Length: 167
Length: 114
Image (cartoon, rainbow over all chains, first blue to last red; front, top):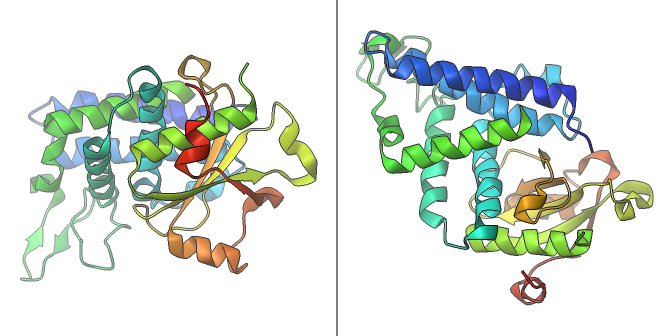
């Protein structure tokens, strides 16, 4: 198996999206939805880079957004497995947080609305059960506040390391 | 260089230690006897209670000799229900891969020195 040019291409775009997320999240004048959208896109492209290693059709991959919840925990686990070589330890808590964050980051895409139960997303306005309309640019994504805590920083380090391996 | 078999077993052990939902791990074999070739990636089928049902998606990882993973690998992670579907032939593995020997459990893996 060789690292294909499609893998590298997706990983490089993931790297650029990650860098843009990092830039935007520190800007108080940028709505949270916009920075988070770049994080969502970065995670998605990281997974697609890994899928391309085994012959997934890169064009088909471009039309689906539902890869993060399933695959980011596996990407993270492989990174943790490498760290375990030097210093074995239990990663249960880390993986639990990775799963939570992967699920919530996937929900940022309008296509991932969990059967209509989670209309909140970072692109289009939505209406909640009380008929109140929400604007992504004015919304606070509280389900992702973990990103600002140590568990979130661990998640981001893992994602960054995985991207750099393939880019 | 460590053999592919030993690396596969070690990888399964480490995954088992990390992932509490992991129930079974199998080697996957390439079609036409290619599995013995050194440039053929290690392929693992992992049955994980903590994953979600989303079909067969082989995720590839590059080799990382510094971490003891001398060969590239692919991991197919499925739920226990999907594993039953796979055994019944209702879903298929890609590229003509077949399910090989189980790497679980703990006993076989612990026989490999770190």
